[in-house]
Amino acid sequence: MKRAVLTRYRAMAYITGVLLILLCVGVVAKYLLEIDGAAGFTQVVGIAHGWLYVVYLIFAFDLGSKARWPVTKQLWVLLAGTIPTAAFFVERRIAKELEPRITDGAAPATAKA
Figure 1 (cartoon, one colour):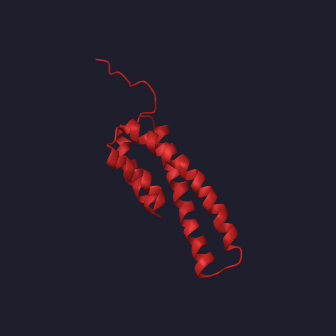
Figure 2 (cartoon, helix red, strand yellow):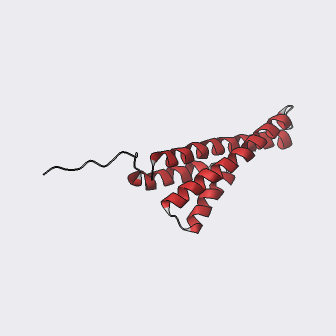
């Protein structure tokens, strides 16, 4: 598997995770604290998170199919973008697991006798 596949997934995991945390903060500011301007903030962040979550799903599915994960593991990774802070923990665990299997696309060196 190429490094780019893991890098795309990791970037989208962080982006999705940050936007979901911001969305949660916006919802608290809007409904509990009743802060002016929180409604607009929540709307913008919610739309951004929704669209970028779709990109996250595509990249996570691509990673899972190339890593040949079972369906249950792939679902676990796909759902991580819906639980605040879960994307960070899942991303870290997946990166540690897949790092030894990464290739940069270069031809392997051959040893001379």
